[in-house]
Length: 168
Image (cartoon, rainbow, N blue to C red; front, side):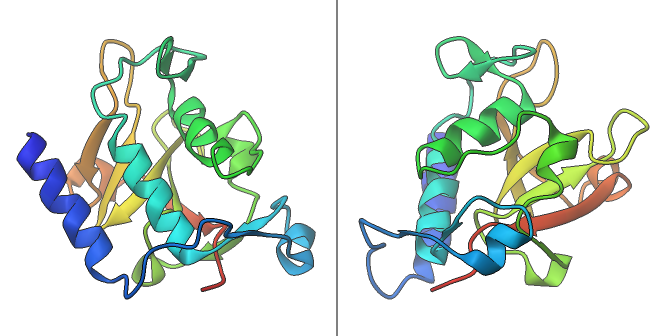
């Protein structure tokens, strides 16, 4: 499993021509008017996707928002993005209104992907890491995991994606 995670990390970073900038958090009035508090660089978003990979195996806990207490889906996303200074809403439905919408073909590492898992739109969120895969905190009794959006379950429940990172 660790080899698989390392291989995915290499693939995600393969597109980077240079290391991510250390101070990549930027203010953007265009994004702010769409509901996101700030914008981060694409390189920083890829770095955040890798940080999400490091949370694989952390147990699910309803309302959880740290590695020590466990994560629910929105808690995981908020935790990872908070490390870049991005304050996201607590609920997945509220998160679905931040940033800008992107199509499946436009997905990039760090984008938020949303699913209808409770018979209501935007009831589940994860962090896209590339190659149609995303990291999420699944359900009670589970743990943070990497899954493929092309699996029948996820394909049938996909609600869309949002991007907080739009600059290079």
